[in-house]
Image (cartoon, rainbow, N blue to C red; front, side, top):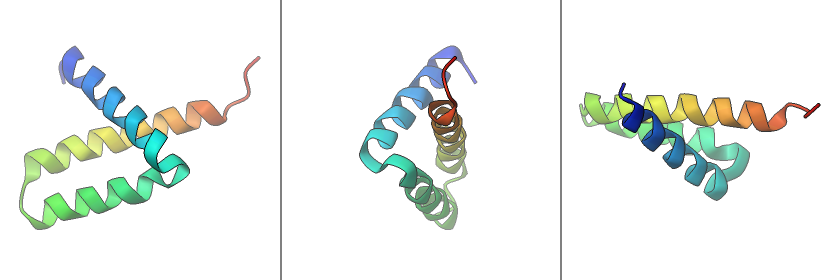
Length: 66
């Protein structure tokens, strides 16, 4: 994954977190299932990366700051 792809995944994840909050995993799970059902493996892989980033960001937000 290139730095540009990582940045794009982060920006998309941030946007989706703004829209869906803690329920972002439900939206992303649906997108992953949808693209898998369509046989669109490349797009499914992209959604998997975005989900991973989103969950990492949510986890970071939930940690107390010292």
